[in-house]
Every structure is written in structure tokens, then in C-alpha cells.
Image (cartoon, rainbow, N blue to C red; front, side):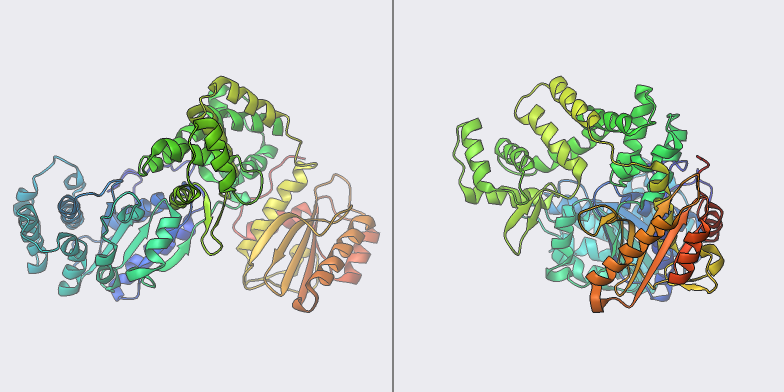
Length: 589
């Protein structure tokens, strides 16, 4: 497909789009499988700024241009983004049906102009469509529905609207795939307008699967995890990038924005940004704006602090916060509660502390019940975390968002000086202790982790590991942890700990100019013994793998052969990376 062909414009430039191929192929293949009635409705779950909408748009564009639009068996893609405010059932229903009609005709005629507002009146679209292709009686009745909606001659307009696509595909035995974005807006805390109940029948038809996503995971789980839509969607989760691909993104972004980023610092940028693609791009882009080289941790921390307090990250997160607070009542108290919650130093947020501080700062005593209710609504917007079973709260597991809330609160809630807040944050970030002692070793770990992910359930040639037999990889890793500690004391930090349940890999990385000796191997063996002791009967297989960039000494090699330890040189690792369809290690010796 020509990248300049699009039914809906994507936002992320091709030059920096990274590592979402798995999801692009998944939704594209599932959409095509719908034509043979082998696809179900799917929900794509993930935090904000993970690229969910971008995935939908790219899949829709492929479906729009890579199919024969004249083939009656082609899959018709429909995109709809639920607006922030849905307060009028008639207005919602009219817009939903008009959008459906426009997308359907645009695909059948391959005329994307139809999707533009002001191109053609909806009343004229019927005549235009008839002149281009044969309308089925079912689809032609959608124009009648529009007229009924304008005249308010329908008993339940939202029911008729959301079930229209399914009705047409069922009657025509055709295939329509609905891509619905921001679906959490179907059920927001500030109003009682609710379309969810009417979607049960709409999403169940094999002729019209619905692929949905949204930017508020808590509400999304509420909508789809209970009530009429419970069990109607297959869940797919999307998280941050792996550090391998976060590193790749940092490099692409540096080229795209003409930023000066040293090779060795790209993995550090990714890690510091929690592998969040938006944060990574923001930091690199900000460094280009500031004309500041990112060649050490101190520089990365400084740029992150600047952007977090006044740049791209600040503006994006501020919009998220303000948009959600505007949906709630008593905005001023809500802002104070969110800010004071972010200042919590304990694991659990203490509503009584918030109550005391509100009294001191605002001179108002707010009942604990009201504070709890506000925090529950803030949790629905993913701004704090609500443990509903235990009825307690924590701050979200996003250090950058958490830090932003403190900065935003000091400036926009407590009335602090922005320049002073930025100066303090930048000074604190610049003084953070260096996190990594050996950057090359850390970078090799990032590449080794991706090798493990990419080769799940595969059999690898033992030559990559200086081992005489083939290596059967675990079926699937549950998680892979970097820099994991088995306890206090020297030698108890594992570079990479990968568990597949009863199968565990322990990985050590030494990017040294000299060969690795016996002491390193002995420590790796001790780490393996600690894992055996911890896992006990729950361990079936333990694999030890050493990366020794410049090889190993004779003594180390003999000891590894005796203990069945896998080891790879830089050349071995690069060959394995190539075999795994991954890029080679950077040349940074």
C-alpha cells in the first residue's frame, strides 16, 4: 500500500513507528477472517499513549486499499470515535448512523472525499451511491433510518443506531468490521446517558465483529468486564515497548528530530521513560529543541525534568488530567484531592491525611465519604489506582505520570511558581545517582532479553551457545526481569531472570575487552544455586547463559562445560540476533 494512501490519517511518522507489527497483523488477519465467520469481537486494552488508536488506523487503511472494494465478499471497515461528551441520544444516533453510511459508501466507491465533512449532504449521498454501485435493500434502508431519526420517529434511537451495521451484514450475509475508539465515553461518571446495554446484540454477530479500544482502562474494564457486554470480547493487551524496541525507537527518533544521542545512551533513555513510546519521543525531541546532547545519564535526567515540567509530556498529561476533572463535579476540590494524593509517601493513599491537609490549605472540612467518592472517579480516569476489593487507593504505576501530578499540583493547584518548580525538579533529577555501572553490559542484556522473547517455543542451534546440543526454548516466558536481586550482598544481582513457570533462565552479561574468567562463572553458578533453593520443587529446568563479549579463559570454559552452562561471544550473539530477525549489537567497543 502506498503510504500516501489513507482513509484516515495516522499521526506517527513511518520513520519512527516501532514494534507494533504483532498487533497490526493480528487485527488485519482477524478482520479478513471475519469474511469466513471465524473472528469475534476484540478489545485492545492498554494505558494511554501506547499506540492503540494508531494500530486501528493503520489496519483500517490496509483494509481500505488492499482489498478489491468491488468484491461483494470484501470486508467493509468502519471507524468511529466516540466523542468526549455524549449527552443527547438523538444527536449521538444521527452521527453514528451518518458515519456508518459515509464509511460504507467511501469503501465501496474507494472515494475518501466522502468521509470529509461538507463534501456531500447526506440526502444527496443516496443518489450518489446508487450511481456508483448496486445498493442492497438492507443498506438502502439505512437512509430511511436517518430520516426517522431526524423526525424523532424511532422508539429507541440509540438501539437502532448501534445495531444498524449488524442488521445489514446479517441480512446481506456480507462482512462489516467496526473499529470503535474511545469506547469508554459510552459510560462516563458525569452523566447517566448509557448506550452500553444496546450493544450486546450488535457485537455478537459473526458477520459484524466489533474491535474496540479506549484511553481509560478502568472504565473500559467496567464496561466490558460486567453487565450486558461481559464475555462478548476477546481481550488483547498492549503494554510498553520492550527495552530492545524502546532503544530502537530512541535511535529512530534521534535521526528523525536530528537529535544528538549517543549509541550507548539509547537503552538508558528507554529505561528511564519506562519504555513508553510517547515519553521516549518527547525526551529525544526536547533534547533536539534544546540543542542538548544526550550522552550521559545526567543529561537524560535533565531533559526529562524539563519536558516533564514544561514540555511535550507536561502538555499531554495536563490535557489528560484537565479533561477528566472537567467531567466531574466540584472541580476545585477534585484538583486538590488528586494533587494531595500524589504526595502520598506510603504505599496506600491515606484519605484522612488528605482531609487534614484540605482543611489546612482550603479551610474546608470535606467528609471522608466525599473524598473516597472523588478518588474512585479519579481512578476511573486512570489518575490513581483503586483496589476495589480491599477498598483502598495507591498512586498509578507510572513514575512519570506520578511525578507530573506533583509538578502540576504545585503550579496549578497550590499556586507555586512554575520557574521555581522546574528549577527544583531539574536540580533533583540532575543529582540522581548514576543507575548503571557498565552501559555496554546493560545494553547487551537488553538484546539478550529480546532474543528470549523472540525465540519462545523454538529450537535453536547449540552453536550460538558453544553447546554441543540443540537448545529447546521454553514455550512461553511469564516475565523477564532485568537487574533482579536474590537478596542482599555482593553477587546476588542477576542481570536477567526469565521464568516460564517451572523453567528458569539466569543470564549474565559481561561486555569486556578481556576474556571472562573463572570467578564470573563461579558467581553465575552460585546465582543458579540460589534460584534452585528459592524455587525448590517448583523448578524443573534451570538454564545458565553467559555473554562474554571477548570470549572466556580456558579455566572458565572448562568449568562451564562441566556445569552445562551456555555462553556466547559478541560474534555468537550477533549471529543469534540475525537468526532471530533482530538487529546486531551496536559497534561501541
